[in-house]
Image (cartoon, rainbow, N blue to C red; front, side, top):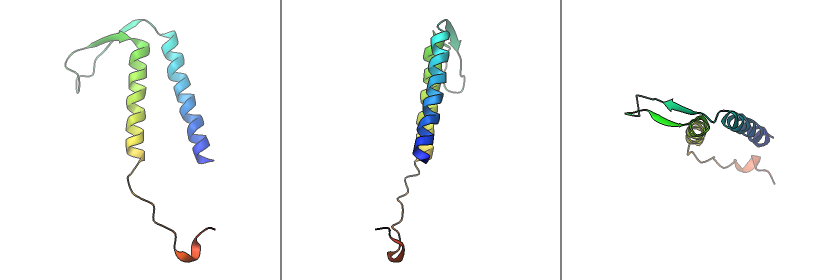
Length: 79
C-alpha cells in the first residue's frame, strides 16, 4: 500500500512538471552561482525537467540508506 501511494505521488509530481513544461516553452536564463560559472539559456520545460530529475536522484540517494534489513528472529518468522 505504501509503494502504491509513493507511485501515485510520484506520477502526480511528474504530471505537474510536464504540464508546466508544456505551457512554458519560452527561453529563460537559469543562473545558479554555487555550481555554474555562467548562465544557462534553455527553454523553461528543459530547466523544469532538469530540476525535477536532480530532485528525484537526490531523493533516491537519500532514501536508500544502504543498510540491509535484519532477518527476523526464529520465533517471529512468517511462513
